[in-house]
Length: 183
Image (cartoon, rainbow, N blue to C red; front, side):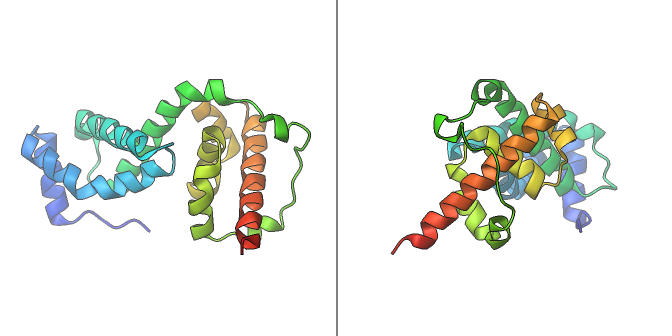
């Protein structure tokens, strides 16, 4: 589960709540790697992920007075980073909600190939997915959101979320089969 905030962490957060720029810099440095790791799963490139992280920290610093120090800071930061990445992608997703021509005839899938995937394989192949499929896969399979929540976040029907998840899994299966067949 989530780890409680350390005394040093609480002190930095309290100074941030008072507006200390030095404390903000300390908080940024302390949680940059964690935020970047979350952001990379939702971003097209490292530069895109860096912009999401920076935007997320701006939101954190602007709203840190509302943060409840009884709750784990990492969980709150993770939520801010995910929402920032989704907000950023949402603008582009309405233009990306289309089917590749080679996928037009195939919508179904089987569930047995998914069981063979491990986390390392999935993370390695995530970059091969179109942005909308990667976002939905992350939200559903990794972050645990349901299709109704994803639909609200991305402003799409829940049925579209299911279809894009299915397509993402199918592409991951194909990518895994290609990797296995390589000499």
